[in-house]
Length: 128
Image (cartoon, rainbow, N blue to C red; front, side, top):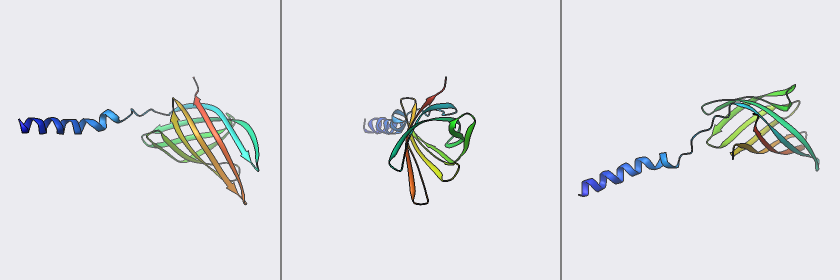
């Protein structure tokens, strides 16, 4: 009887990580939404368009305000629902830290250059 109980406990322990792991969602595709920027204390509402390609934990693609003005994603990583990448825009490197929430990528972007900083709230959804 003790051996049977131990086998059941062992089987349950092996199954627990599988029960709690959320299925990975592929982020490949086009995304668009808001990019609410704060620079020098002033807020400016803008838009963001992203074309993402995910291969495992590696994220590549482009980001910009529209289809004609896009910058290449560098250092793109996906870790569960957390997404991080850098974009070298027309000046400083913009660092994105996003989280996949209810099918949307939401989070922050930040950059600094010459003693000035910019922050932004990002909220993009997949384009259908």
